[in-house]
Length: 94
Image 1 (tube, one colour):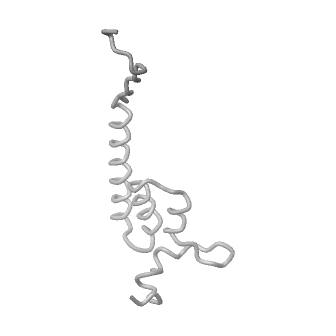
Image 2 (tube, one colour):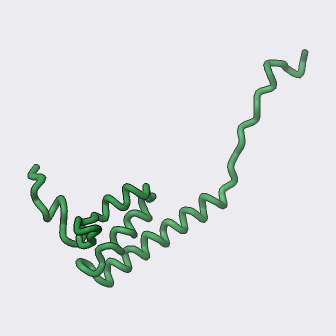
Image 3 (cartoon, one colour):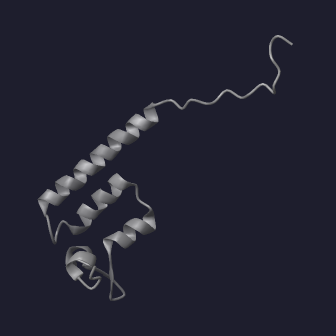
């Protein structure tokens, strides 16, 4: 694979942000923040919407955020089942 291919490895719509003159890529921020998958996808669409997909990318970001919210609400509504601790090997018949 050609790692010098900017359209694949460093597309303009992901490298438009500069910090001290050096490009800051979307993937670097996502990895540095350890974002969950759905949030990372939304972040990616928000990052690039002006330079690539416009309103379509904003709608995609919203879709990922809403889906993540639904999953988080369901996860929080599900009670955690705690294991019953062992009784130290004694039985009730002893």
